[in-house]
Length: 67
Image (tube, rainbow, N blue to C red; front, side, top):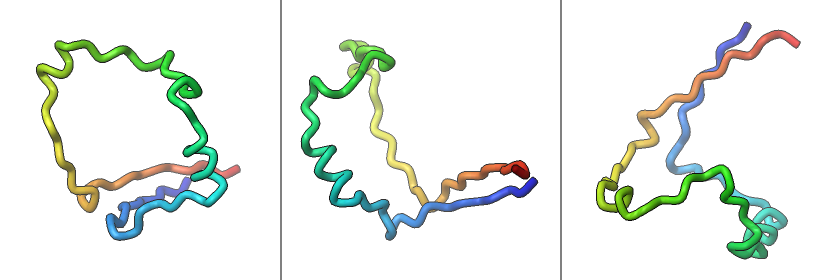
């Protein structure tokens, strides 16, 4: 097995292709499936806190098996 470590570079944000951007811009709110996301009630917003994370401190690890 191989372990791969990845640390995102905040200076290199992921770019959408023109096709992806066009498809995203064409979506209306009604086109988005929210069925697997619970509705956020007033209690959620009353207790919400702003959290700023430093993406340079996050590391994503994945272990890949031999295929």
